[in-house]
Length: 247
Image (cartoon, rainbow, N blue to C red; front, side, top):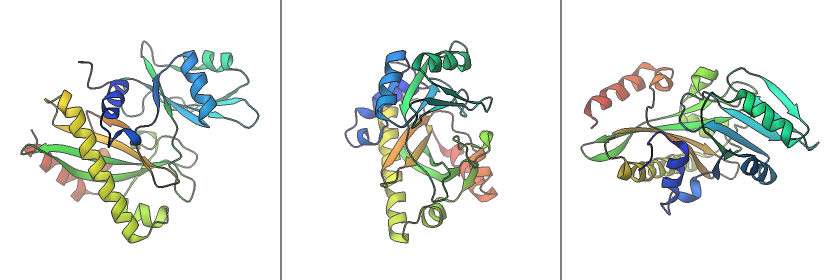
C-alpha cells in the first residue's frame, strides 16, 4: 500500500475502475522523457508536487506556435519562455519545491465562455457507511490565471449558474452534468476508500472540457471548507454539520 496523499498513486487507483478510468487525465511521474513525451501530444500540461495541497508548487507549461515553451509558476507568479527542452528543464528544477517528487499531467481546457479557467469541487463524506456528496461548488480563476483556488485569487461560484450562465448549457443539460459529477465522485471515492478505509472525507477537483467531458484532476484527503465559506454561510455551516456525522 502506498500513500493516500500521493496524486500519482491515486490516479493509478482510480484508473483501475472501468467507469472512472476515462475521466482521469494522463499522468506520469515527472522526468525529462515523460515531459518531452507529454508536450508532444498535448498543447499544455501541469506539473504538480506529488504530495502537496492548496496548489502549492503548481506549474503550467504551454507549447507555443513558435515551438518554444512558456512556463508559468503559481508560487511566484513568474512566466518564462524557453527555446529548448534543456532550458525548460533547468527552469523547472529551479522552481520545484525542495525535495518533492513531481508528476506531469495532461492539461484540460476547462474554460468559461469568457475564457477563464474553472473547476468544480465535490466534497464527500462517509455518513452511516455511505459516501455522500455533502457539497459542490465551482471555482473560477482570476483573469489570465491558471489556478482556481482561493489562495491563488480564485472565486467561488454556484455550480448550476456556472453551467448555464458561464458555459451556456441548457437547464436540463446542466442538471444532467451535475448528476454525472456526483455519480463519478462517489465511484472514485469508493475506489480510493477501498484501499484506505480509515479516511472518511475527500474532496475531488473536476474539470469540464469543451466537449462536455468530465475530468478528475485529483482527489484531496484534507479538503478545506474555505471554498464553501466564500460561497455563503449556509453552505459552510452545512459542511461543518455533516462533518460531525462523518466517520
